[in-house]
Length: 244
Length: 118
Image 1 (tube, one colour):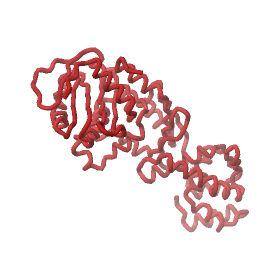
Image 2 (tube, helix red, strand yellow):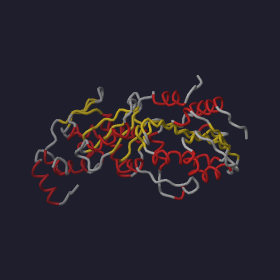
Image 3 (tube, one colour):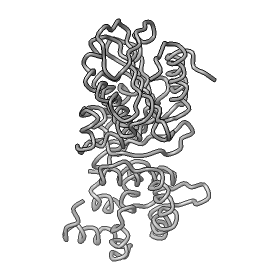
Image 4 (cartoon, helix red, strand yellow):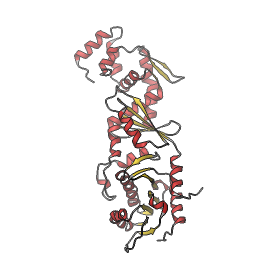
């Protein structure tokens, strides 16, 4: 089954309903998290845990199976992540990777740019580490790409990485390294970053998020290699991506 | 958790029907304390609920994500140690077939000793 649009990609990823269970002494935390994760595919449930000093969250899959638990304090790190360029991430004590693994495949709602930037960084960092494969990133505005230009130019020089930016704008400046595809329509509504590793499926990952309100994104990130493959294929068949 | 000498004396006085040494031995196990703390809020629980609470508390302590293998270990430990011991002391009813647990007779002094319910 191939993907026709980015919207379809997001819908399919969202279809796997997840449950986020919040164990805390009062329900305020759960209400806050509900705001963060409420989309029709994440059910946030509150469980009273008055006898526990510190609360925690549990992620369950659609059939209720236990996926993982994490203290609320550590979980907050995901909601206000630190952002670092991919080549410095490993030198910090931010364990964003573990947090992202924890929530992989869990649709989120109303994320802001800072949060999506943090997830994008993780994907770019993987691409940097693997140093071989295809990295595609969408930029809704020229200014957004201009901000990340240094990062993407540096990624394009790394090993055998093939880097393409999709831009909902014209781009005239000649670049060394990344290719630029100028397009319109869905590219302007979605924030996406996809990395398909050359040799191993295990490193492939993608973020797809739609700006449903100004500055607020609903989306999902996933390590499902089949999904990443279809996303890459959709971009290659719908847009003129130059072979590098 | 306080566990000062006065607390232990208070506990011993309040639960004279239990052997205090045995009771303290029981409460010295972290998973037992978490199980009782969970049952304080949810007197009728499942083994799954309790395994979730134990794994969640471990995640808080370690500041990291506790995954499925830790959850499975908590399950096994509940089944083979924590729940049979609590049942032997008459504090809970444990149905291993239905995998349900009911708090039947946890003395309030035990909850006080654990620092819950204040």
